[in-house]
Image 1 (cartoon, rainbow, N blue to C red):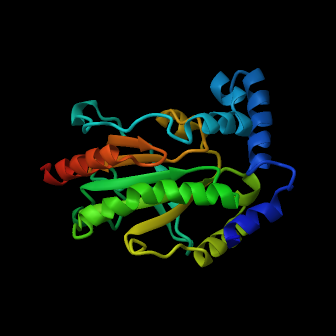
Image 2 (tube, helix red, strand yellow; image 1 turned 180 degrees about the vertical axis):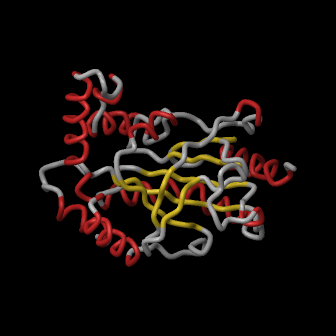
Length: 253
């Protein structure tokens, strides 16, 4: 068992599903907020770990097929701003784009294409392995195709919604464990592994993310707009559309 999974299992009752404390606590808070007229949607209220698992068993994480062609720039929506942390504690705001880029980021540092791989309930060994397989199915062929390009970046983002694990001391400890368990591989140099802590309800709402047991893949242009999207494990035809869409972004002026 990897150190990250062991840490999660030690901080959560073994009778609960992965990140159950976060799920049920958030559900209780959402229920109270909903009664007061300030809360979450019915979808957010009614869904949970077991609903996601039931859905996962039906489609294996493939909630939809990826875009077959690139989304036109005029129709593309902006990826919502997300604060993330590297395992060494450094913070960053994604996406890195020519619109509202952070201080110290020059135009030369802004990638023409960024692939963001999002994973949520990757707390147990089983889910960790599933998420890693999903992400590798996209990221490895992606960098086989663009390993020589300096205008392409990939971010693997893991979300930690638990308020307890988001507390400063626990967050530092968790990031330290993440650093020790950082995967190695032929694309490890290219893959930037980051973590986002706290409540991500409104972030997920903007991206229409409901099932938290699958992987979500977004291809962004230099303006931080979503130009292509995939889910779950990659199929050959989906990889072809990802590569062709990325090639088009690299050619855009």
